[in-house]
Amino acid sequence: MSSILLIGAGRMGAALARGWIAQGRGPEITVLEPSVDAGFAKALKKAGGRLNPKAALIGAPKAVVLAVKPQVLESVAREAVRFAGAKPVFISIAAGIALRKLGTWLGDRAAVVRAMPNLPAALGAGATVAAANDRVTAAQRKLAGALLSAAGALEWLTDESPIDAVTAVSGSGPAYVFLLVETLAAAGIAAGLKPDLAMRLARLTIAGSGALMQSWPDRDAATMRRDVTSPGGTTEAALKVLMAPGGLAPLMAKAVKAATKRAKELGA
Image 1 (tube, rainbow, N blue to C red):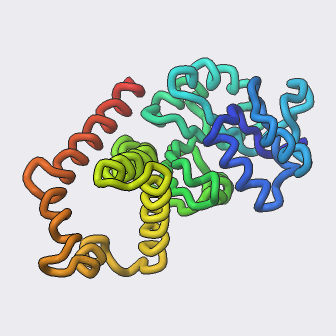
Image 2 (cartoon, rainbow, N blue to C red):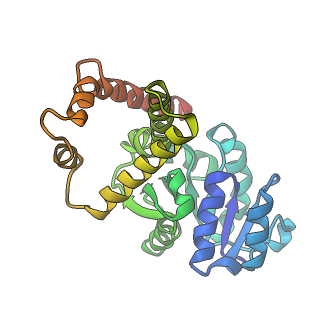
């Protein structure tokens, strides 16, 4: 019998499962997903995991991970209640859905962890923030931590209230970075570069800068920015535009505020 039940294997669910496989947990994994990616299905089978077995064969999981969209989470959670007799820890990675509401759907006695990973989890380079209700035992917290940290760095909160802002910053953040690549490449094309070269340079620059930041964990971003900005140089000329009133900072603040608001709306 499997001890990890994953319900939903889209991009994020599959990313988590690949992390568990890398940990050597393949034989422990059961996945329920009607439209599974063929490559993921092959990797799961090779690792000894199971895909869509009959309900009677699922057994009594120690962890039930709910990796579905917020709009369908209620129906999925109410169906997952049938595993509550095994006293698993339920882990939800849906944006906006509070522990209180999850407890309503899963039962007042359910041990529930609410988590927000992000897409770099697919490479084991994700950033996940999690909070637990008071039903989660020390052992369950340890198990949930092991499963979530398979995707990268993990931070625990004592209070779940910041998670909507976490969703807006790190959960949605990869899309902001991809947009930056798009716009940087488009600006390069406008300045005279060929499209393929502009895109290669934009991708390599963003990826390399991220790797550089990771290699200097004790240096803050503002210091690094100043270090690469020569007085009177080209970088300073560009930053004067980006850092002007109405530039990047207020626009990013507005974007994060909008994402935070939407996360709250999803959980209403």
